[in-house]
Length: 193
Image (tube, rainbow, N blue to C red):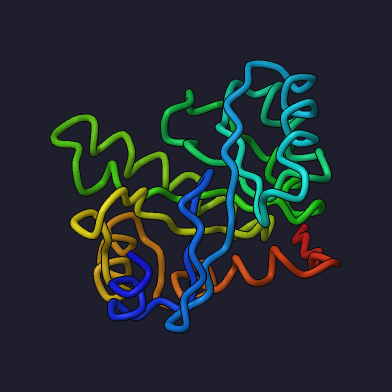
C-alpha cells in the first residue's frame, strides 16, 4: 500500500495498529485508534498506546465526550465525526481543539461508498465542520480509510471529493500536510475570534 500511496502523490501515510513497514517512497507513521465511551477509558488507553503510536486517533462521541477528549494531551485526531449527531461538535469544542492543536478527521470513505440520504448527511456534516474550521482554525486531516489499494484515492481525487462540500484546494493541501504539523512538539495555536 505504501508504494501505491507514493504513486498516487502522497508523501506519508498512517498505518493503524500494526502493519508498520518503513518505505523509501514515503513516510509511514504508526497510528492507534481508541474507541471508548468515557474520557477515563480514553486516558487509560492512551497510556497503553504510549510510544507504540506516532498519532492517537479517538472516535468521536456525544458533545460532552468530544469536549473533554480534545483537551487530552495525548490525543492527536478526533475521527468519525460524521457518525455523531449534528450538535456533538460545536463552537466550544472547535475552540478547544484549536487551542490544543487537536485535528478533526474528514473521512472520504462514506462520500465514496454511501448513497442517497446517507451521503447527503455526510456532505452536510462536513460542510458544517468546514465552517467551524474556518472560524476557529483547528487542524483538519483527510483520510480514505483504505484497507487495500482498491480503497486508496489519489491526491487529485481527494481534491475533487472535498470540493463536494465546499473545501478549497488550499484547504485540501493544508489538510493533507497537517499530519507532519501534528507530530511537531509544539503544535501551532491559531484561534480566530
